Length: 431
Image 1 (cartoon, one colour):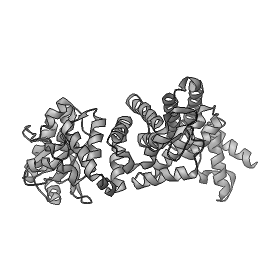
Image 2: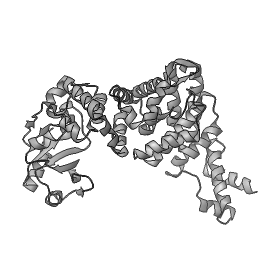
Image 3: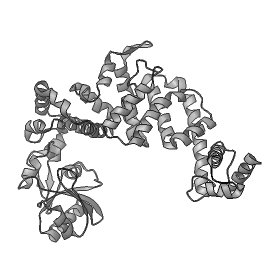
Image 4: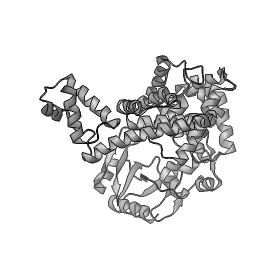
């Protein structure tokens, strides 16, 4: 922790203001986790003046609390002005006790609400047992559940009681929360413990507020699996996904977990055979409201629509087309998703060999495209469009694009593996 204290001391020396490590960083230090960015509170409301005094950083004034972001002593930081007159006032504004901890420049800890005690006892508790924090911002309920899921901590009995009473009396206020704020907390909640998070949301009857169509699947039963409704099937998929997140490095994990949450939205059958463009529109509508990036939305829809095809043999040419259309990452996570669903639904042994063979075919295609990058110092093709025009004495036009697309397919399927072979292949197409 000495380097963190050096940062505080440098800030105090250069600005003449007191500074504390707070929030997620203080909590992570207490939990023995290495933070990527240091969160600070500074006894000043003028972040521009702090930046000038430090000679580093830029001020982001878009939110309710201007943030100074920069780097000191090789560490990235974000600094906020105190909320209130003292550090204790600032900590009292924070919703969860384990986030209401501050570390001084002398190494002392300010912990007026017992956050360190709660960390040791693995409980999530409203700061100061103050239900008014929920009244001020009801979305803090979802944040409380997210922390409980992510850190596998129990919710303190009084906080649980207060929240349930609030929801009984003022549940309608949940409807007034903007969709993008729901989305921000949902994405964070799904990030590491998607199964546990959704299970907790269900336990507190929150799902109807942010995803009513998911809640409706509790009454939908597939003809082949009448013992479980589609909602339970989704929970099963999320449980397997949660385990995979712990044991494997999943590329584009946001799309991966969102596909698990939304894979049966708009359908009435387990295999999704009744899925239509209307269902895709529903997924797109929710993710757009939640302010999910458009590329992630495209990946989610591609996973949902494409993963079941991997339960049958897929040849290299088909994989090549998919990689070129959707990207290698999108195809890989769709195949990984198919594996998770097979495990969740209990038919993994029936399709294991097929999935392994499909994985091998995909690897061959990806290896060939990677060889292009190795041979061309990072380029995705052996030749550019201009080089094709020079080689074939052709003018710009649609035909050049068609030739490049065909060359991509030839590379992915192993027919072309060098610049010279690419030139021969192109000549053969117009010869």
